[in-house]
Length: 415
Image 1 (cartoon, rainbow, N blue to C red):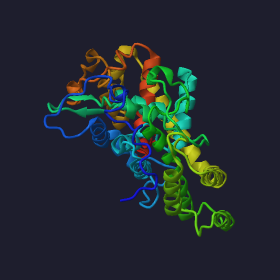
Image 2 (cartoon, helix red, strand yellow):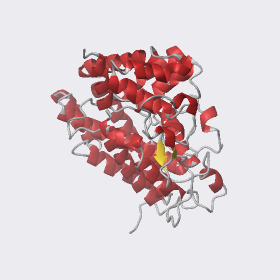
Image 3 (spheres, helix red, strand yellow):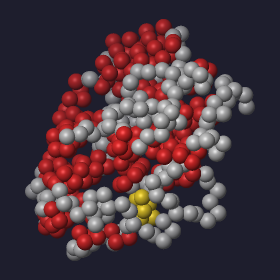
Image 4 (cartoon, rainbow, N blue to C red):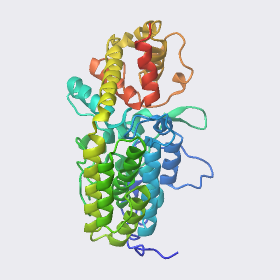
């Protein structure tokens, strides 16, 4: 099938022929081998992400609208599927590594908090107050795939995901909120944990990561408009503005189908290793105009205020109730005691927490059978400081789905 671009990126794609291939496929630990495995390293990353619990929970996490019981409203899982579709199509036409692109795309939002960006803001406020650092979902996504997500090996032992550097880099580097065009990868091979301290600080290390970064914007702007119309967030006047915007670009509508088709074609037609992964000036301007429309009429819509307040109350109350249980090395035992009042929240948190603490803290009654089968990094040690415990609470809440967050919050207010 003829391509738009003519595979002009074939010589710079992530491949064994590249001199940095060993760096791209490096893992923090040695991932156990699978006999007769026909997958390359990035395909293996893709399936490990696909089978992770964090990926499954995306189906009950807010994208923009807190309406996850409505089958027709976009959730975080649908969004990452859109990004995977857009970025894989672009990568294939450009001649880039499609498997690496798909792995980054499917994983890029694993670190998102419940309740969308509002949940992220609340967790960031807590983190800044108690730990002196900002919470942002790109870095939290790296933390999840590095330390918090576990999969069973062939012997039913739970281990860390241990993804490749290229996929980990794509996750923490995917922020697409800055209006920029002509993306190109950085040259430096950095320590992603130590060196990354702020959102969008570095460009991705691969061309494939750049494709995902741009595709993230292309995928969400049209779908947010469709959801807003379905939920009657937009007035007739707002929709009239959209109609006029479409006419400027000789289109009949601005929606997901139109935006994705036109912008995929435009990216493939205009990108090159010399100019970067880019849209034409015309379509870059259109994308930014649509983003601004969404900001003015959707993301700042007054109808989101009650949801904003609800998310704040739920997250802060869960945090405070869990924080009150801190007793140093006796914390897990204390959580078990408090399970008499809050059985779901306290028992579930104790089970989860014990997987990431040194074994001596796991000797309590009714131990979850999975806890003793975990050969993962014990990132919380012996809970020797309150700051370590606070980080654990933030990790736990950030991984919750909206549904589960509400379930354990309701436990707090039911007597």
